[in-house]
Image (cartoon, rainbow, N blue to C red; front, side, top):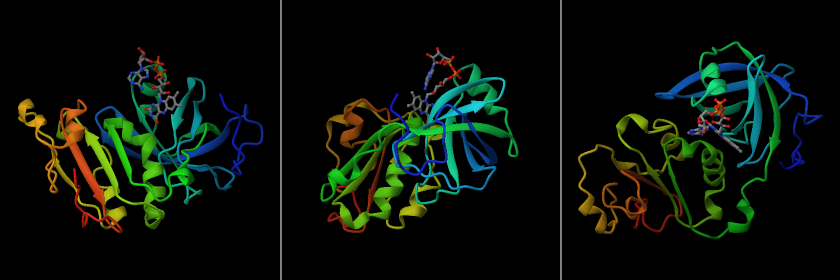
Length: 229
Ligand SMILES: Cc1cc2nc3c(=O)[nH]c(=O)nc-3n(C[C@H](O)[C@H](O)[C@H](O)COP(=O)(O)OP(=O)(O)OC[C@H]3O[C@@H](n4cnc5c(N)ncnc54)[C@H](O)[C@@H]3O)c2cc1C
C-alpha cells in the first residue's frame, strides 16, 4: 500500500484511525449506501480524486473504501459502500450519529494534470461510478481544461442506477439520456451511436454492458452537449 500522500491529510499516524461521525446516510440502490462524514475534531480532510481510506467500524472490522465526494469540500468526507460481506453488511446497519474510524487517504490520485487538453471518456457500471465520482467532480470544476467529457455508464436495469439525481444538476450542462430496461435487443448493439445517444445503441454497450447511459458534459463540448458516439 502506498504511504499517505502528502496532501495535508488529517491522519498524523497512518496506523491510527481518526474518529468521524456519520452525518447522513443515503440509500443509493439496493445494498448500496452512501455516508457523509465529519471529523469529530472539525479538521478538514484533504485528499485527491482516486484516493481511498481504510474505514473502521469499531469492534467489527476495517475495509478499504474509495472516496466518492468532492475534494474541494474537505469538510465533508463521502464514502459509497456495497454490502457484500461481514463488515460491509454490519456497516449497512449504522445510522447517522454513529462514529467510525478513518485512516488515510491512501493510494495514488488520478493523474488529472497529465490529460489537460484531452477528451475524457469515463466507462463504468453500477458501483464502479463510486470511485470515479470525485474525479468527475474535479473535471467539472476544471471543465475548461478538457475537450469532450463523456460518461458511459452501464446498468442492468432501472433500479441500479447510482447517483441519478446528483451528477446532472451538478454539471448544469449535462445531457442525460438512457435506456435501462431489459427489453433491448442484442442485435441493436451492432449499430453505432448517433449524435443523440439513446443508450441502447451506443458504443459502450458493445463493450458488454447490458444497458448504457451516456452523459455528455457540455461547456466546451463541440457536440453541443450531445454525445457524438
Ligand atoms: C482500494 C479499494 C477501494 C475500494 N473502494 C470501494 C468502494 O468505494 N465501495 C465499496 O463498496 N467497496 C470498495 N472496495 C471493496 C471493499 O473494500 C470490499 O467490498 C470490502 O472489503 C468487503 O468486506 P466485507 O468484510 O464486507 O466482505 P468480505 O468478507 O471481504 O467479502 C465477502 C464476499 O464478497 C466478495 N466481495 C468482496 N468485495 C466485493 C465487491 N466489491 N463486489 C462484489 N463482491 C465482493 C468476496 O469475494 C467474498 O466472497 C474497495 C477495495 C479496495 C481495495
